[in-house]
Amino acid sequence: MVPKVQSAWGVVYHIDQKSGEYRYLLVKRFALSKKVERIAPKGKIHPAETPEQAALREIQEETWLLVKHLQIKQLIDTVSLQLYTDSGELWIDKDITYYLVKYDGDPDAVKIADTEWFLGMYKWAKIQEVLSLVIYKDLREVFRKAHAKIWTVSQRDTFIDKLF
Image (cartoon, rainbow, N blue to C red; front, side):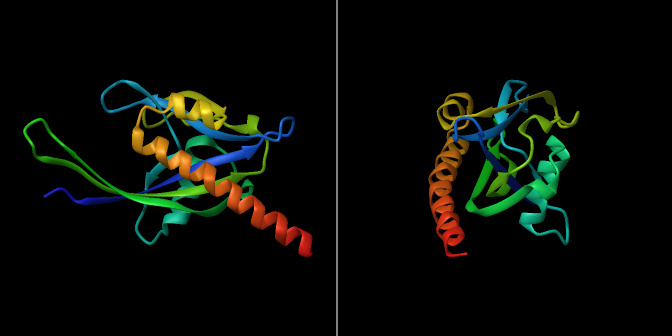
């Protein structure tokens, strides 16, 4: 039996200072299939670690963005993923928790860690670019949900700022 893996992902965004547009962080790496993929920072949840802590840790480890500039805005989704071998045996059994994470530091501070098949490349992309660059349908849907949630979060934050 394949053990269930718990994983946390951070859909990291920042607001472009010139255009005011939302930009999402995509990192480039080799997939298990050896094809190049663009994904959000992610990784396994360690024992005694919350999914939120794991998401922030993984973002920092993979991109070198400092946690002090990262803020989890809200949960986007939790998805179960099962992958099977050609012979039909369960190969991967994983629960993935996705968080919307705002980055308020210098967007040029990204440095891609030389681990997990990363190619040392990243892109801050508008949602239209994200949807055309991400090859996984389920991950594109997560980015769509994240983009929709940003509007909700930013409207709430603007309302609260006006109160104080």
